[in-house]
Image (tube, rainbow, N blue to C red):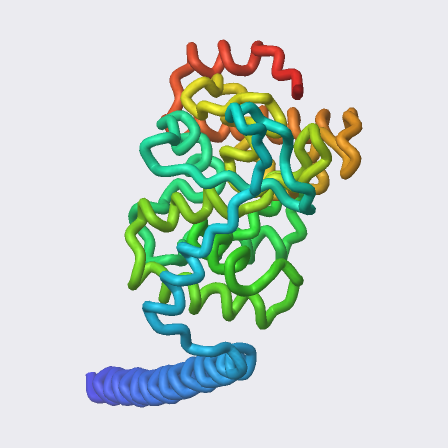
Length: 292
């Protein structure tokens, strides 16, 4: 019995020693892991800080002034009020108020660009992580991860040049814009300021009102069919690629075909997120959408 007890005690001591070694190892692994996390976080913060070091910190007045800076297209009229024509510029801009925008335009826009728009703080972390995953694995469909607020920041303040620094600046500026503007104001800024490609006159059209008239000949946005609304909100992703007209106003068949492919994607996405019924989807997908 004494030999058995000795063996049991040896085994017990061995197990205790092994457990102590294991706990010490785990402690050091945990410490090294925490240190590593701080190191990576610090490196990341330092990298981001280097990217945005030259970006000015815009105050509330500066941001609001730029957002409200709307240069509209000028027209010439006869003395009786009839239209002579549009003064020649490179761009056609028409401002619109929120009450002029039909709900199906907003639904389609949110579905395809930023379905979490009314709940995020300027950046959508899930969308950002999805975009990173798509880029890392080189997936065929890459969404970009930019929220509507980020796109407003880009179009109004930063330009469209693709740089890592621009993306970082875009994120910080989007969060700042969200501090000073309501969601409705940001949404309206997007619909008034983003480019939609060329209209039938050859002008670059900016804002959904100019796009509706320049592409479909529709002045009142409430006259837009759901299929036309889906067509229009799909254009800002790549205005030049989806443009149905050239810079001289000639019909661009390949651009129109690409725009229609994009329109079908918008409709499918709007259906998927529940902003469209199956019946509405079927009616829209069957509608012939000729440009003017």
